[in-house]
Image (cartoon, rainbow, N blue to C red; front, side, top):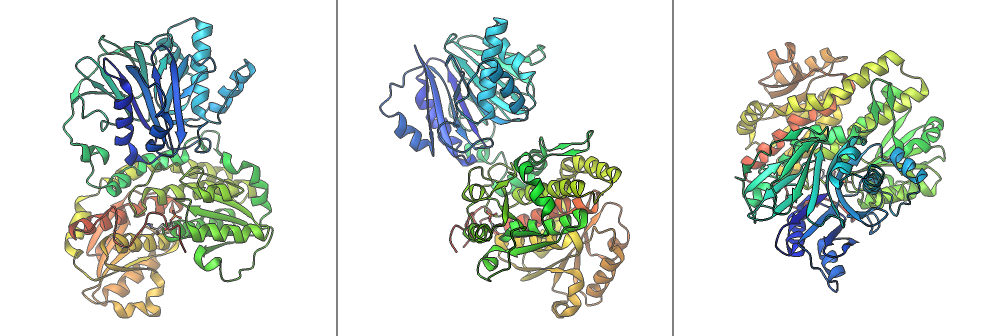
Length: 612
Ligand code: AGP
């Protein structure tokens, strides 16, 4: 996620801003920049880390008691110096930093270009900066008013801080869908994406609410309005958390924070890509390759680990909805087994980090045979993103915990959108059914929120089974990949051996493992083959296996048979992986914590496996 820091007061701004950016480094970023206002408005920015920015400015004259600073997590446009923030307006009188996604930036950019504006970068942020300048000039209004009017014209999420050469005693800050906090010092103000850069200076803070805009003027009281121009009284709070807790948003670990970010990360994966009323799914990043998808005789999915599990959900989605054959390949196997690859093949490479060596090699092999390569990555401008012909970013924000959680559900969200779009193009799904699924998909983030509330039962189960030596995870259909993912989560952070299996496969051998000491997790939310799942559960129960079942709210049959039950909201079968995975992530997390494991950096693991 991008990081924002700003300062206005009596002290030199530069040291405060740079230290603030360092406090936000934990959020993950790929470029950094700063703007300082003294007699001149000077912007300094560079690709890379805050240390690279310090190197970049070491010869510069960095005076000024007002400034803004930013670490960028690229969403639109490559991570490079031109796309880094702050962005100047065309006249260089205004500088702006932004966290979020302006969905309608393309249409706004076209209008501004028609009015003679030229753009240096490919970012949505620069469009907003010039929109503010354009309004300020045409309406002959204050910067505050220009920002307020501009924000009524944008759709999407933003946290911004703006300053102008023509008004060296004011910062303008505003937010919608992306957090922003204002620190109130003795005779100065601080603004940041979260309280970590502020807590060292003051504990008095105001958290802006959505669609609020603040006028932060030197030696004056803070003024807050809504972007609809209603006055708001600033609500000053006292910061209670310490710095370490603040970095994790108050959660004990990044992994737990990221588990709870999933309603928003799934929303961000859908943002701008689903129009329910119009019955539209639009994946801008692959729109030029839809014909390739239409002409494909099969889809090959290459990935590793959790991303491979997302790919397996993708297989069920594409075949079930779009009736297109899919093969899911471990990239590490695919690259060496001399696979048959056709020019008409479409390969989908899935990777959170975008740097996994095996996946990258699989892409190069498929590309060398003439196949079309689409990517589903979380890191903009990553090696895999750049190696593909096109793709759709998951927009889940940086995933710091080594065990992947929000990236998995974001990958499944993008795969679901792709499969729905392909089904619509191939005519394999009727319009009314398509609309039904879109309406339900739009409700998934709220249903994830409800699912996250189930904690007491999860902790009770974790307490009961934290010392066992083996676990089995079973699922059928769309829930089989969820069983695999649940087993991997437990393995990699608690070091308990766990195996995922198709539920019906138990009787072909693994059922020999079942006894009273074997906890068996059944992901049993299926509809179509519910009675088959019941008989699988009975097979395990007959051998005294201890049954932990993930069921749909209101389930009766499974609840009668299982020893422990976790209920999740009802949803369409195709969306079940997005909900059923959540309790398994939490179960693995709580067991690992109870076992004293290092949840965020498990032993032997790396966040990105950039070697073979
Ligand atoms: C997931 O919890 C693991 N950390 C690991 O399996 C990971 O999914 C795998 O290494 C692939 O990484 P990628 O998505 O960045 O390519």
